[in-house]
Image (cartoon, rainbow over all chains, first blue to last red; front, side, top):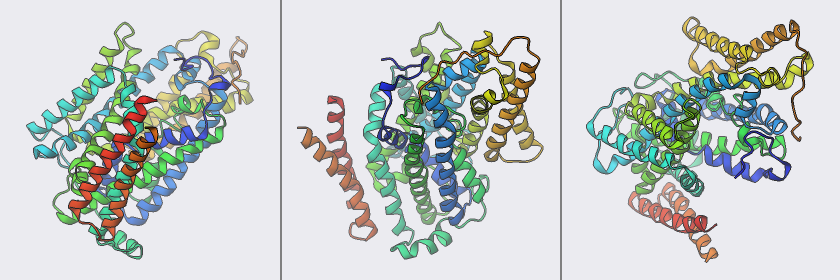
Length: 464
Length: 55
C-alpha cells in the first residue's frame, strides 16, 4: 500500500474528521494512563490542581495540535521525517531517529512493566514498590522477560494484527476505565454527586507531601505535564505524519477526543483506583496497575491492563525498530525490531523506569520538541525573511548545521535551566522549543545573508 | 450475522458500564460486578473480533 512517505498525500486519499476522532481516542486510551493517574496522586496533587489543571493543560494540548501542527501538516502533506530530511539532511535526521528510537524503547519498557503487573496477579507475585529502582523479585524478572519477549516477537512480525486488536478494544477499554472510576467513588465515600467535591478535596486528592520520593505537583505542574506529555507529537510535529491526511487543518481539534477521554477521564479514574488502595492500606503505596484493576473490576480489569499495555508497547517497539533501521540499513526489520524489543525489555526489568514515568515523559518532549520548532520557524518565517527553505535538498547537504546547532543549543539551554536554575523537567519543553526556533532563525539569517548562492525554491505545493 | 455480532458487542458495552453504575448506587456487590464485567468483555470481543476479521 502506498503510504505517501516521500510525496504529498493526494486529495483523493484525505480522511474525514471522524477517522481522526477514532484514531486519537484509540491512541490516548492506553497502558500509560494506568501509571500516570496514580502517579499524580503519589505526587501529592490537590483536587483543584488536578481537575482544573488537567482541563487547562489538555485544552492547551488540543490547541497546539489544532493551531501549530495541523496547519503545517495540511499544507505540506508529508511525514515529519520527509519534511525533516528536506530541511535538515539525512545525517541529522539519522541522529534524531536514534534519539527517537531510544526514547521509544524506554516508553515501551514502561508498558511491559504495566502488563507484567497484571500477569503477576494470578501468581501472587511481589509487585515493585514506588521507590524501587532495581528488580525486586525473581517473579518480576520472569514476568517481564516473558511479556517482553512476546511483545518483541509480535512487533517484529509486523503489528497489523495487534493494531486490529487495539482498534477493537478502544471503546471497551475506555468504558473499563470509566467503570473503574465510578466503582471507586462509593468505596471512597462518594455516594452522591453533591458529596464529590468535599470528599475529593479532603480525602482523595488532599495535596500535601508526595509519596515514595516523587516530585511534588502543583497546579502548574499538572498544566504543563498535560500540555507537554505529547509535546513530541504536537509542537514537536510528529503528528504531521497523521494529520497530513486531514481534509482541513481544523481536524487537528479531533485530538480533543484523545485528550479528554484518555488524559482526563482515564487519568482521573486510574487515580481514583490508587486512592482506594491507599484508603484501604495507607502503607501500600505501590503503583501496580494489575492488582488495582483486578481489585476493582476483577478479571476484566486484568485483561484491560494487559491489552492496554500490549497495544501501546507493540507499535512503540515497531516504531523504535524502524528508527534504528536507519542505523543498520543492511539488517532486516525483523532483527532490528527484536533488538529494540530486547532493549525495551531490559529497561522494563528496572521498575524505576515506570515509577518515574512522569519525569521521563517530560524529558521525552524536551528532547524531541526542538525539531518541531525548526519546522514551524521555517514554515512561517523563512519566506518573510527571504531565507532558504528546504536547505538540505536545495544545497545538497546531508547535515544542516544551523538546524543541528539550534537543536543542541535548545538542549544545552534546557540542561542549564535544569542544573543551574533548578527548573524541573516538566517546564523545560516550552523554553527549549522557543530557543530552538530563535537560534535556527538567527543562524539561517546570517548563513543566507552572507551566502553567494541565491535562495532557491524547491518546493512543490501541497494542496490546502 | 452482522447484526447479531453488532448486538453482541452492544450487549458487551452495556454489561461493562451499567453494572458499575448499579455498584455506585449500591445495587450490586463486588462479586456480581466483577462477573458481569467479565461477561461484558466476553460479549464485546465475541461481537467485535469476528466482525473486524471479516471486514
